Amino acid sequence: MSPTNLGFLLNARQVACEFGFLTVPEFAEQTLRTLATVAKLQRSRGHLLNWYDTRTLEPLRPRFVSSVDSGNLVASLWTLQQGCLDLLQRPLLEKQLAEGLADHLRILVDGHAFPQKRFRTFLEQIRKRSWLQRLLAPSEEGLLESDLETKNPKYESDVHWFATESLSRVRNLRKAVQVYVPWMLPEFVPLWKDATLDFKFDSQSMTIQRLPEVVDQLGARLQFALDHANGSGERKALYQRLQDMLPDARSRALALIEDLKQIAETAGKFADEMDFRFLLDPRRKLLSLGFEVESGKHASACYDLLASEARIAVFVAIAKEDIPQDVWFLLGRSHTREHGFPVLLSWTGTMFEYLMPVLWMRTYPNTLLDNSRIAAVRLQQIYGTEKSVPWGISESAYAKRDEGGIYQYQAFGLPDISLHQGDPNALVISPYSTFLALHVDPTAALRNLRRMEGEGWLGPYGFYESADYSTTSGRRSWRHRHELVRCWMAHHQGMSLIALANFLHDGVVQRWFHADRRVQATELVLHEKPATNVKSLRQLYGAAA
Image 1 (cartoon, rainbow, N blue to C red):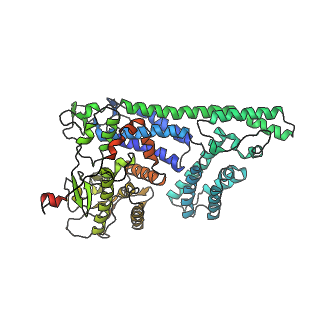
Image 2: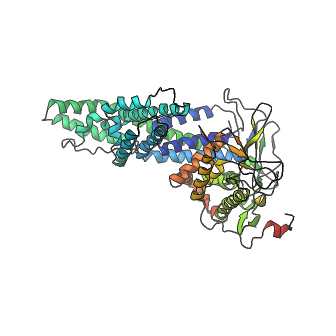
Image 3: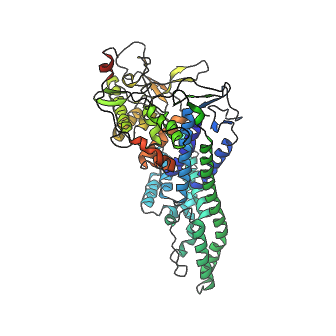
């Protein structure tokens, strides 16, 4: 486990809520458990070390604090903090919970494990906003569970997984209603238009923060109705049943509010305790690659390029006031011009260097960083077309394995925009690189992903890590000659999920990150104007470049 992986886990859970794959109570419970585990980990000056044994929680040797991983974690923690505060101002039962269940059911329909007719009915109920009542209806409960509890041996294991998870979604939705908003249960539908109660039964207008107040208001209205009930004993019994459920609902709502506040407070505390001052190289005024705990020394190299995954670390360290803002402007801004596009040079020319920080940090039109991210994507597309392969090159696992059969890992990139020239015969395409580009060129990115899917790159847990087209023959074309790297890396899956959330939910992860006042106070550095009169590497260094 690394700090980056941990950060993506925390943010991926937030995104799961946004997609409707988790209820807020599930998110809170799981996140609190994770943060409790993090609190047990050995740290150095507030920083998590770069590697831990996930079974014993002991740090692995050599003990090392990575500047870039710590920067990623602070960005993730601030995103978590602000996302939890945002959840308090949103309803407990939002429409995306229905859409998340629909995503699960759609896969089961494709796998012939759920009736298509019932699926169409459910989609229509989402459109009419009647899905919750139908889902909670007693007549529906057994029928839906019967559909999902498929035991047919002809179904593949992933279909079984989605059936089980869909059933879990249904049960957790019902539990959330029963525990937090019992007045939404079908048995109380007759009270929704009760003139004596005069209460608005609308789950969409009741934010989590307001739930205790809503419970108190409903309790008072129910007591009034009980005191003045002139109707049937059946209606009075209905008042009383709901009244009896409210104290527990109020207690649960207060506990959920406290859990979300506790997550936000703990995330902020962990981030505040991470001191970046000792990671600054005093001579070069740049962030060192990291700190070797055993020797007590900085790594000898520094991050010195703006087009780097490390710029998120520099940004948050400045926002925390741990390092001066001058560090940002000391980062290298060397440019080149390729195919008419001016672009910042990076160390290896990977999509990761240009786009990974954008998962959290916004870019602004006609700025240095925005123009470079657009140019990097376009140049990747041109490079893929020239090689007759899908586009998207970054650091990733590739086809070579060690003696234990584990895939090896390396940075791959475009030679024309990188300062470090790698193996000219290496060509490794990673799908997560295309996900990172969704915000830049969504049409081309989706077309590229469909091409990868059509060529068999999609496995049971999502797209495989990469496809290795590398050759030692020096040929100019690698068409249809590749080896799939059949593994999944947690941080690349996390990046893909967060990129999807930003694309489909209007930059939601960026919105959470930028909700932090320290980020708002620092974001002016992101408005730097682009360079002019940029020459190509060939113009600068001659034809040999």
